[in-house]
Structure formats: C-alpha cells, structure tokens
Image (cartoon, rainbow, N blue to C red; front, side, top):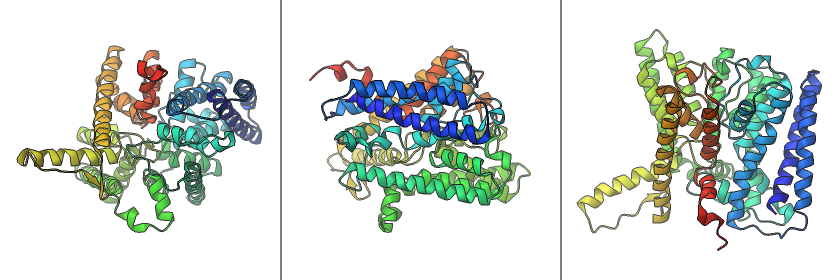
Length: 478
C-alpha cells in the first residue's frame, strides 16, 4: 500500500513537472527538455511502484502513516531535483538536493547566486515546490486517499503540525479539501493584488505561491526589496501573517464562528508577539538611525512577520541593523507562528502551554497540594500533551545545540552556525552573518548542506515523525 501511495504521489509530481514544462514552452526557453526527461523518469518509477502495489491490502496503521510522510518528502525531493541537475542549472547533486528540499520543506534557503539568470520554467518550479510543500504533500493526498479506499487519519496524525489536531469535519478528507480551498483562494487573491501593485503576472504567481506557503523563494536575488514598493511590502506582510494562522481556525472563521476565532489563545499570543517585536524594532531603528517612522515600521513589520511565519522574504538586510535586533529576530525565528499553518519553528501553541506550565509550577511551590490544571481556550490540556510539548522543546534545543557544534566543527563561523541551524530547523530561509538575507548559502561545506537538508526535513515534520524511524521499537512487529 505504501508503494502504491508513493507511486501515485510521483504521478502527481509528474503533472507538476509537466506544468513547469508548459511554462518553458510558453517562454520558448531551453529548460523544456530537462522537464520532459524529469517527467518521464518520475512517471516511469511512479507506474512501477503502482504496479508493485497492485492488489495491496486497503489498510494503513499508524506506523505506515509515519513511513509514508517521511519517505514521501525525501522521494519528492530526489525526483524534484532532476530539472536542476539534468538541465545543468545546478550541476552539483548536493546543491540540487539542498535547493529542492529547501523548496518542499518551504524553508527558502538558496544556493543560487544569480536567480534572475534562471529560465522561467525553473523559477516556476522553485515556487511550485514551496506551494505544494507548504500545506504538506501528504496533506494534499489525504483528499485523494479515499481513491484507494484508505482513511487518511494515520497520515494526518503524522503530518499535521502542532500538539493538537483540530478536525472541523468528522471526515478528515473533507477537512483537507476545505483547507486546500482556503489555501488556493488566498493564493489567487494575492496574485490579483500583486498584479495591481505593478508586479508582472509571472512574478505575482511565483510570489503568491511562496507567500501563502510561507516559503520565501523569490524570482529576484534581492527578494521583495527589489520592488521598492510600500504597497507590495504591506500586501505581502498581511498575507504572510494570515498564512501563519492555524488553517482550521481560518476555516471556523469562514464558517461564521468569529467569536472562537477572536478568542483563540494561540492567535492572541501570535498577534501580541508580532506587535511587540515590530514596535520594539521600529522604535529602535527610528531612534538610532535616520530612518523615518513609516519606513522603520514597515521594514520592522515585514522582517518580523517574515521570520516569525518562517517565510524568509526580505525588504532589508537586517545584518546591517544594531546587533540587539538580530537577537530579537532570532527569538522570533525560534518561536514561529501557529500550529496547523504552513509555518515552522516551535509554534505559538507550545509556547502558550509552556508559559502556563511554568506559571502553575510557581503556584504549586506555594500550594503543594493544589490541583492546578493547564487550560487553553477553556479546555484542560492533558498531562500527556504537556509531556509531549516539554519533550519536543527539549529535543528541539538538544538537536539545535548538537547541530551548531557540528557546523562549527565543519569550519562554519559561530554566528553562521547558529543562524543556519535555527533557520533550517524552523524552515525560515535566511540566517545570520554571511548566511543572512543578502547572501546565498552556496559557500557552505558539502557535509553542512546535507546536515541542513536533514534539519529542514526534521523541522517540517516536527522532529518525532522522522526520528521515530530511527528507533528500534518502531520496526518491531508488535
């Protein structure tokens, strides 16, 4: 059954590759051949896997879900790197895989140093990898799993980000279709607004794909700064913020449950976080430089939302700002936006639960016999969810520290090691130092790129999904 589903996924990827081939054909550019060859390879392997899985038992257990999710991401990246490599646009296997994993994990870190020189088909493929990867390749297949007569809840449990998974509809496939409807609707609206702002239709589509997926790949080397347009800055800021909200919460809002939307604890925390850091950074920029109030606010708002939602677009090189502001942006990168969105980082809901656990611990010291439940949105958070959140946060910190040490051991600078590791685990894009928003990551050592590619996958699938495959218990039959 796993082979069958992976085969079906590869056929979906084949269609995506052919779409990009259509873009190449439209612009009469020479990357068409690389897309046709890549499509043929992906389709052949897909058909072979479907044949192997023919007549498979129509059932999936929880373990199968975890295998499908992890293997699907790697498979998509391996076949997705083919157009870059076959066409010679990224001649290194390491770099081609890194760029593709960065796309499908919606990280946005790039090794390209001259993006504008790339043909339209390749640029469209970069944007499309992020758009499909944003809400999850596998989340997309939940809507089509019923074709195989298989329920999608096991896959959803493995792929959905955050400690809680809200089901708006009892049938998870219908929920997936609704959420994809909102996702596509937001993308379409943003395309129209960006065209009104003076962006070309092609650039508007690519930037809309990478904004709603909070991916951050741009068609320009200098990212959104290239346009020097306050209108574009504000429009993209708004849509990055919206994309950082839990999609099931957006669904509830569209269904008329405004009260539940407004009073959501995670949304409040997310809004307060963005507001506080935006105002603090804007005030600091205005008071310590010649930047005007509006410009300071706009640049601060854009960078804070871009990094908190793990999008990674830039309208300024924040490495030229005072170093205290790097610290603020690093905190924002670690926190991340809401669970159930396309974003990375630890996620706001976990921060809310951690704050409440700490608050209760202080009360418990004063009143040892008191029973103090942790409540979020008037619901009691079970001890098992609390322990999962604590375990996740501890594991996140340990993996980050070990990875930073490995990066430094590979000869990468201290600031760059911290920036690239936090950025990769949080699926951000830009890092710190010479891996900041004004630079690509092309100069990193080969082993560092493979480590960061793995961290992108870990971060995108919330650590446990991938690490579970490396435990002996997972492979025991009972």
